[in-house]
Image (cartoon, rainbow, N blue to C red; front, side, top):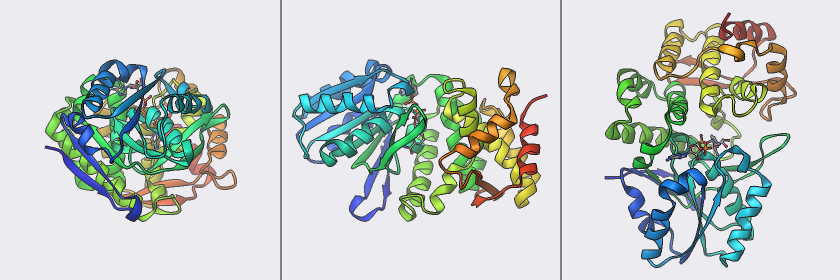
Length: 364
Ligand SMILES: NC(=O)c1ccc[n+]([C@@H]2O[C@H](COP(=O)([O-])OP(=O)(O)OC[C@H]3O[C@@H](n4cnc5c(N)ncnc54)[C@H](O)[C@@H]3O)[C@@H](O)[C@H]2O)c1
C-alpha cells in the first residue's frame, strides 16, 4: 500500500507516492504521454534501469535511456548537454516525459534538463536514495554545479509526480543511507518534535530499514517539506528553515573538498554546531541540544570534526561561509532552534559566538 502526499501548488500541484514495490505501478502513475527518456546513473542503472524501461515498454511507451556516470562530477552543464543530445536522438517533443531515476544528483541534473529542454518537458522524479526521497525530489529545486561552486545554475521546476519505492533502498550503500538520515533528523528538529521522539525510540529499527517504519518516517518528512514548499515555493521566507545545519555544513564540505564528507554527514556536523549556537543565542534548552547530538551519534553521524578534518582552520571555514550563496553581504545567516520542533531563520550571530562554538565541534 502506497502512502500519497500531495504538494498543494495550485496549477503545479503534484502527488508523492511512497510505498514498497510501487515502481511496478510507475506506468500507471505517469502523466498521459507516449514517449519517455529515463535518465539514471551507472549504479542505479545496474539495479533498476532495465526493469523500469521494460515496465514502460510493456505499457506501450516509447522509451529511450540516458545513463551518466555516478557521482557529483556528472552534475554539470556537460551532463545536461548529454541529456539534451539523448532527448533529441529519441525525438522527444514537448508532450514527452523525462524520468529522473536515481539519487539527488540524477534528480537535480535531469530536473534541470527537463526544465530547459524545449523550454520545459514534464519531469517525473523516481528517487532511489534516502536523501532524494525525503528532500531533493520534492520541492522543485533543480541545478547543476559550476567549477566555482555547487548548484550555481538552476531553476525551480516542479515535477509532475514523485514515485518513491522503498524497496530501492535495499541496495543503497550503508554510508549513503546513514547520510540521508541527517535530513530526516533535521525535519524533527525544525518542525516535528514527535517525529524526533519517534526517531529516538526507534533508532535501531530505522537503521535496520524496517519497511513500515520507513514508510511512516519518509511520508512524514515529505508532508513537512510539502507543507513548507506550498507556502514558500521560491524560498523568499520560511523555506529557509530547511537549511538548518547547512551554513556550517556547506562550508565544511567546501573546505574539506567535495568527496571527503557526504552531504548528510556535513549537515549532521552543521546541525550539531547550530544546536550549540542555539543554546547561547536563542535559549535552546541544553537538554534538547544534547538530544540532537545523541541521536545523530546513535545513527552513526558525525557531530565533531575528527581525524584530519579536525585540523580545518576556522579562517578557511569562515571564508567559505561568507562565500555561500545564501550569505548576506558576506555575513552568514543561521537557522537556530528555540525548542524542539521549532526554529527561526535569518539569525545573525556574533563573530565570537561563531568562532567559540566552532572550537566545540573541533575535537581536540
Ligand atoms: N534539489 C534539492 O532540493 C536538493 C536537496 C538536497 C540535496 N540535493 C542534491 O542531491 C545530491 C545528493 O544526493 P544523493 O545523496 O542522493 O547523492 P547521489 O545521487 O550521488 O547518490 C549517492 C550514491 O548512491 C547511489 N545510489 C542511489 N540510489 C541507489 C540505490 N537505490 N541503490 C544503490 N545505489 C544507489 C548513487 O549512484 C551514488 O553513487 C547533491 O547533488 C545535492 O546537491 C538537492
